[in-house]
Image (tube, rainbow, N blue to C red; front, side, top):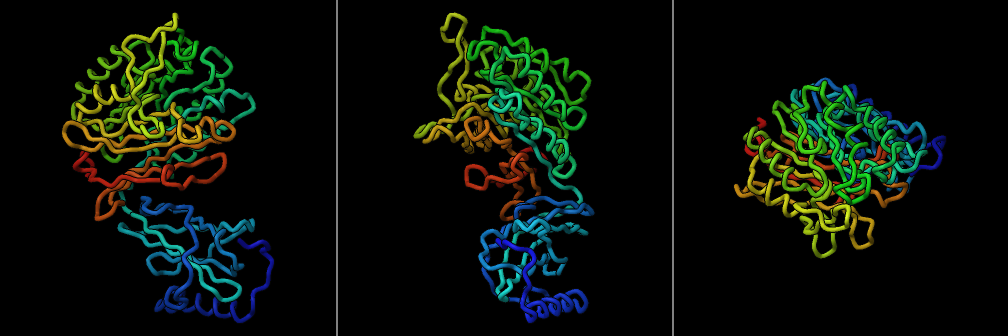
Amino acid sequence: MKEDTKYRAPTGVLRAIAAAVLLVALAGCSTLTDLFPGGASDLEFVEPRAGSQVSVGNSVPVRVDTSAVSTPLESVHLEVNGDWVGVLSDSDGDGDYTGSFMPTREGRFRLSAIGIGEDGSIRRGTIELVGGDHPGFSIVMIPDTQSMIEIQSNTMFSQMTGWIAQQQDALDIEFVTHVGDIVEHGSSGSEWSRADAAMDELDGVVAYSTTVGNHDYADRNNKESSTALYRQYFGSQRYSGYGWYGGAGPRDTNHYQIFDAGGQQFLHLALEWEAPTDVLTWARGILEANPGMPTIITTHAYLWDNPGAMGHSTITQSVTSSGDPYPGSSSGEEIYQALVRPYPQVFMVLGGHFHMGPDGEDGEYHQVSSNDAGLPVYEMLADYQTWENGGQGWLRIIQFIPGGGAGGLDRIAVRTYSPVLSRYQTDANSQFHFDLSFAQRFGID
């Protein structure tokens, strides 16, 4: 990463760059790739990410990280499909070069960042995007916010939802789902008031849901204790004016939504923690009343990251007021058997709660299960409550990208991003994808 933006490059290098750009821009017969062949591949596109969907006529922000480069750079250039677009800028000298380009047609786009060092060395980075008149869409998954909302001065939850609202158009965010444990203390009116203010950012902007976690009961883990504060702020009355709201289930702690995305209607079920028997019965009724509608389920505890036993959780932790196991509570495995496996329309399940990994601070796991029809079900756990500052605003962006997969398939791309830190987690547990045919799996052409 360069440390001083006011260095003076050797005159010969500057002249070579100027001549190259002039040839590319005016003659139209060469590219920077042709004029500056070779070079190390150590420039990283931070934005957009590889495989992202872009739309014709909409400007695409570009940000390239050069921190892996040890030699000071004179300039970083952007090419799109071999055509020179312009010079990226590093206005604050932090090594992140920014700019933009605008797709003018459908199809695939190959973006190349070409860095030219003060010493004449060449650095590169390349990704491919998908462009069209009918771009994909995104769903945002908000993991457990309890440890952030517990501290009055911690505004990260509001920063998360504010960012979602600001990015709704740019990312075509069509739905937002909170996995539960909205608050740390279910009996704290001040925590619920702060959570209410955070979620207010989404009202009138995007369809959304909240799910009851074990901390959202007045007495943690006690299903017989009050959910009055949850219902006061996030009961059915909150959504009654929205056309996407379907209705409430038992105790007004379970809800369903129907939203439009990518030319298709989707059903979403928000089920309380360790959904008991009456909730499973209600959910089956909703599924059977909307046969064939692609369905996502969010429930607080479904997958776990228990070392050596990752996958569907096999325990229940809910109790009665006397401390006995709450009758009829369902583990993740039991929810899978009751609602996911028998219903081929369910293609995704999202949850939080568990953060068991080897160091006790993981909270990430994903897998692909099969249902009775032999179709894939994409299942994800995300819970960052034990990370620094209660989670640092980490959330999940789930992008549906037509044609963005390998071999002409479509892609569901999952990224973990913090609006608080303005950066992504890029390890294999935080950034991954599933390739499939949208048309075959849920009817999107």
